Length: 336
Ligand code: AHM
Ligand code: MG
Image (cartoon, rainbow, N blue to C red):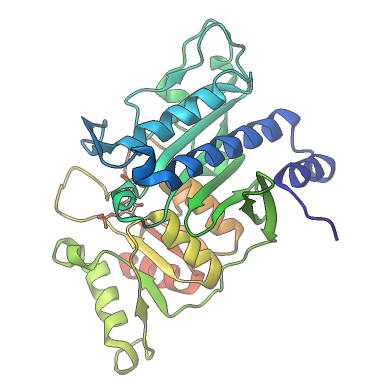
């Protein structure tokens, strides 16, 4: 049986699901950019890419060199092809305008160019997360410059989402709203090859992921839930749970897609003005779309993440996602 490359998968999607050709092109361009980022990440100290830039992004976080390199790779790869009306990134204050010399297209691309970048210097998996939206028609005119409002669409409006994980293998995980597929980068061929067909997240789990060092800052329902998990077999949940925390959302979510689990980054009182650490547009929405497409669930503790109406580009949100039974349980505790 011949191998199914990403290109072949996308062409077959066009035939069977009417995936538009410009969306297919967009995904291929993003995948090509991810190959380039994978290459830069894998060079590490040899490529002089480790360490900090000495600058901060709009969120007040120190930018790593690879944050900036990855952001530039994605912008350069995507700006000229005529498939996008604009881009937005965790690493840029404002929406990125497609330069006037290039044609504009129908889609908006939103990304976290290098998620988990605190892990780069210690050689632990990092990744690129992306989300694709349609550009509302009023912003499609060539002369109109794009503002934030064009991007402020709930996650249910995403037409595609995915992530690349740069780990022992480089993989691309993709959903076009028709299941979740995993492709592994074959470095000899230079192609992403379909290796994980129709990924599904087990409904139950005995594994959870949370940064326990923030425990004293959590809200009561999360404290109660994690206490119950830690109480194990002798506690009210009647079973032992294992814990993992990689501090790279891509790597934690990838483990959950592979063998189930629950990922939590709750709201906490360290910075009362911020609703959690993770960003709705760049992290929570694409990951929630993927997890739901794989049969899991994702909420902010109260409502489905994909139903949240964004009010700003860099807005943050509490995240509970993964195996359905545990997401429902912790969400139920918030409502109790
Ligand atoms: P980043 O996009 O700046 O890398 O931040 C997001 C990351 C997630 O990948 C990860 O789940 C989380 O931050 C880890 O946070 P903490 O360091 O508080 O454990
Ligand atoms: Mg991130």
